[in-house]
Every structure is written in C-alpha cells, then in structure tokens.
Image (tube, rainbow, N blue to C red; front, top):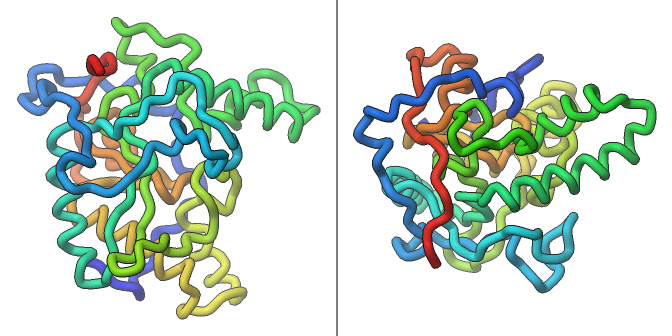
Length: 265
C-alpha cells in the first residue's frame, strides 16, 4: 500500500550495519548468479553521489576515493526499481539513485571519513564505542576478505541502493528533510514520524509525506529500508535478511547476494 497517511514504523533500537554479518548466503539460489548492470541503461535516473567532482555532494565536496561513476546493481533490483517507478507515476514522481554497488576501496574511504568526523564530535569515546557509532551509518570494511562472507559490506553485493525522489515534470528533488549522507538523527527514517507524534509538525508536512511515499513505494515492490538512513534500501543481501527478520516478516534463513568484484570498465 502507498499512502501519505500510512506512517513509517518507529523503532526503539533497530539493528545496525554491524549486526548482519553472521547471516549465511545461499550461493545455490539462482538469483546469486545475477550480474551487475548499470541501472541508468534501463531508464532509472541517477548520478553516483560519491563520484561527483563539482563540490555538490556534501559533506565530502569532492569525489570520494575509490568511487565509480556507474550505478551498478543486480538485475532483479533494476526490475524492481522499474516497478517502483510505475507506482510512483501516479504521484508525479520517480526514484533517483545516488549510489548502488560500491567498491570496497570507496567503502573504506567512507569509513575513514566518518571515523574522523565522529572522533572529533565524540572526543571522550574510546575506539570500541566510536566504531559502534560509525557502524550505524557505514558497514565496517576494515576486516574485508573476499573469501569471508562475514566481512562483506552490503553495497559490495549489488543488493543495496541509496536513492531519493524527484518530480517527474520539473526534475526537482522532493524535500526529504535532509541531504544524502547526513549521518545524524534527522536521517533516521522515522525522524519526522517522531516529530509528528510529539505534536511538532502536522500531517501536511511535505518532508513527512515524501518520506512516506518513498518508503512505502519501495516496500510495495519488495525492498526493505535500513531504519537509520531514509534513503537506503536492500534486497537479497545480508542486511535485507536482517531487516526482514527484525520486522517480523516471513523469516528468511539466508541471503543470496554475496560480494562481487567491480565489473571491468
């Protein structure tokens, strides 16, 4: 169901990007063999946020080391995004991708960036506490091993996408209340639900309505949302299984998308 009056669930303590690494991957699932394709070649709008060199990608303001310009994801995700756009057309909107497949080198650069940022914001925190906080927003790539599924970042599988909505007619982005990769409480999917619950905004607030539209359109076509990032959605990877099981959906015993090296360019 897609409706502006359907709230995004509020969570007290949802699992983080550090909690999914013990989930097995079923390499015998036929979907495990899907290749990476650039979503833009199938009509999905987007631009890789991390590869931008024009400074219009806060908080980085430059290309992130290791980033690629393509928006690669697994074949099933492209089909699902096309189906999401078919739903959104009724509302005069479409998805716009910021990021999909992410090389491990880029993942490491993002980890380093936010490690330093939060280290300055949390000067009393020890390394363990700091790492736990960073894992709310960035999968830890420091132990990455292509042969060890417990070390694979979700974005390195092609099963995770970061996106927003834009107006079909004007091509203007819809107001989500924050910019991409604003790693703060405002980014949490339920942030404006909490403001509504506290009487600080009304049901007509555009930020609330736009987040609900994105959340439920993606949900209606099989994605699950990572609750700490209103823009992050998964299908088929370990984070997808973790989130489904946490939400009480039909339990999924294993993921099917594992790590893939970047395609030849």
